Length: 293
Picture 1 (cartoon, rainbow, N blue to C red):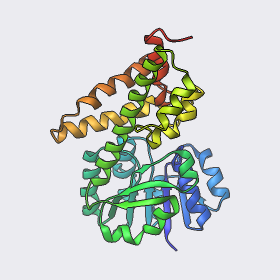
Picture 2 (picture 1 turned 60 degrees about the vertical axis):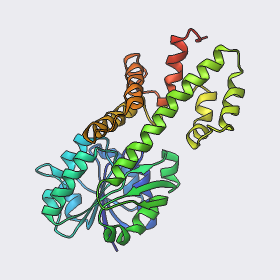
Picture 3 (picture 1 turned 135 degrees about the vertical axis):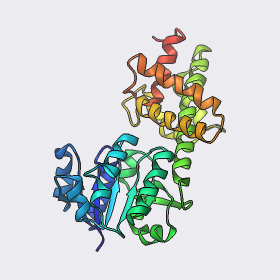
């Protein structure tokens, strides 16, 4: 039985780890907020008190954390994963982080004798709970094949896409398109609203038109109900767009649309909407357009 250690029990990490526990894997968990481990422990996981402890009792360590600084500290800190892992162990990071940091971690992994897989995910909390995430994996192919069962416990569409940072670049590319779609949708809705279109009917028709992408379908009720309770916040999208623009700069890829859309997230944050769902940009745009009722 594979001994898996899991670090990071946020909105996505918690249900992903729970699916491993329910599947019967030998699972040890660590989270800075101890209370978030309670449900996992009830499901059969072992709670730990430190990164060192969870790493030392695991053959595979999985991280799902918020950003580059968090991953860097967990992986490379003096009491982190690499300081406590044994040669031959596997490190899987499923966070959305920069290709630059990921490449540095890859170098450190080789020096330590660890197998490093980059495995960012696409999907929502609902998909995480249902084990229907899309998982993008790059790194040593043999290691991917050897741990495919772990990924299949958390997702139903698993793609191996290369031996280096390909998964990082694809994850950022997809998030860029999702973010641009939100701003495009907001502008289209505001324009239609200004022309007297019925709000719900307009959304319904757009959903079923040539531009009715899966993200538009998923956000249908969010928009119809004007309920911007966050599935993914404007602040989180701003973080991802910073990563996108940094990656573009490093590769000399001009990302003019992404650079413009990044300013929309700043506008949401500056007007107190940073913790709203990123599709809540329509709320700000209606205000700017004099459409607020």
